[in-house]
Amino acid sequence: MQTYLLKCVTSSEIVLLLWVIRVMALKRFGVSVPEDLLEKFDKLVEKKKYVGRSEAIRDAMREFISQTEWEENQEGTMASLNIVYQHKPKLMAELMRVQHDGHANVVSTVHVHVSKSHCLEVITLRGKKEPIEDLANKISGLKGIEYVRLFTFFLPEGEDENHPHNH
Image (cartoon, rainbow, N blue to C red; front, side):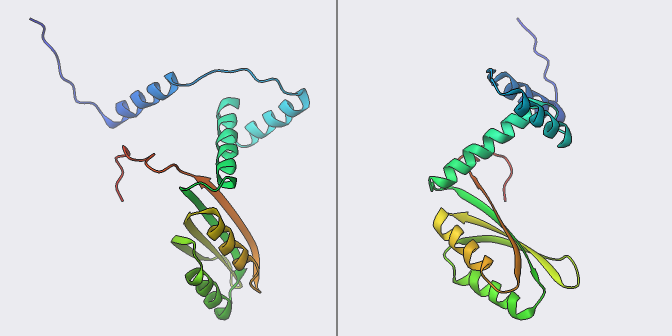
């Protein structure tokens, strides 16, 4: 008869186990690039404090895939619209009206007073490409808007089904 010893597992041990499983699933491949391109890439890897080329390449691949999926207009699109504008009540009211009148699904907004004269607003959006781009374009055309940057990414539906974090 075998005897088994049960042990309490700490959260850090679980994280380590999940990391090991993830690393085991990694695939290696070779890439040929011009030397000058690799030198520029290595400088950015160092500047951005990546552990190494592999993580930087994974980030670049994720961004490329996300951008391609955005362009293909798939469901599950998420975006953040970052806006810097002059702190004027009329403009703030117009910005709110455009958000409410648009067909993009506004998940949340964060409003920050960055100076006495300027605000930063970050709008989190979910949905299809056209309504999100339409909202971004309408906002960028408002008088007093100084900077608009749309960051998009794609999350396939059901990807987080086994994620233990509940909202």
